[in-house]
Length: 305
Image 1 (cartoon, rainbow, N blue to C red):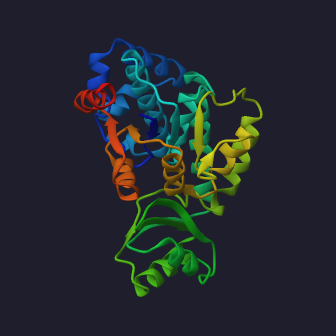
Image 2: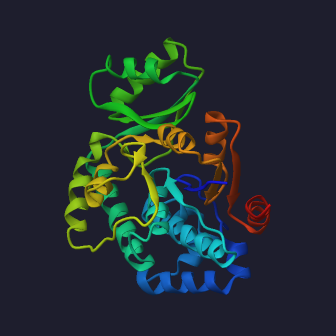
Image 3: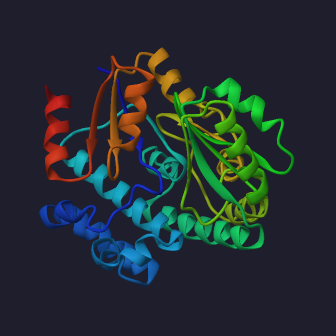
C-alpha cells in the first residue's frame, strides 16, 4: 500500500469542524492553545461558534491550518504516516507541514501573512471566479484564448469540473461562451477575489518578500506541488509565491502519484471534496478521509486493514 495525504482547500470549512477531535485528544487541545498564543485570539471560538469569521478568509486559512495540524498529530499518535503528500490551494500548506518545511508556529505566521496579502490584492484588483461543469480541458483552454481581458483556468479539479478566475467582465464573457459551447453548468463561486490569477500578482510579490525573512527546510518526503502538478524539485519560496497566481493542477497531481504506484489517498480536512475529485480521476484507488471520530476510525480500518 502506497499512501498519499491530500489536504482540503479553502471553501470546505464549516462551523464545528475538528470539535470531536478537540474533545477526544489532549494533543489537539494543546495545538489549539498554542495557536491562541501565537495568533493572539481564540481560534477555537471561531472554529466551533463563529460562522461569519470562519468564512472570512483572514480567519479561514488559519483555522484550516490548525485543523490540518490537529489531524496530522492524531494520525501520528495512531502510528499512521504517508510517504507522499499534496493539497488543493491552501491545502498545500498542510502538505508543507507534513513535510516539515516549517514548524506549526512558523506555518501559522506564514498563513496569516498570505491571507492578508491576498485580501489586499483582492480589494485593489476586484475579480471573480466560477466553476465550469461538464466541459473538457482542451475546449475550455481554447475558449480562454478567445476572451479579452484577464481570465484563466485557476483550478484543474477533476474531469468535467474546472474553475476559472479573472476580472469581472472577462469571467462573465467566458461563462457565457462556455454555456454556448456546451458546458453543462456554470456556477459563480462565492470568493472575495480572483485567486490563482494574474490579479493576485501584488500578493505574490509581497508574499515572496515576506518569505525572504523566513527560514524553511527542504521537504522530507515526496511533495507534489500545485504549480507544476509534479514533485517539488527546488526553489521552495518561489514555488510558494507563484502558487498565488498560478493554476492549481489537482488532476495532474493525482495522475502523477497514481503513475508512481500510489493506491491509497487520505483526505485531511473538512468534507470529502477532494475524495470526490479523485474518484472521478481513477475509480480503482482506495480513498479515505479524516475530519471527525467516525471518519478517523474508518480510515484507520483502511490503513491497518
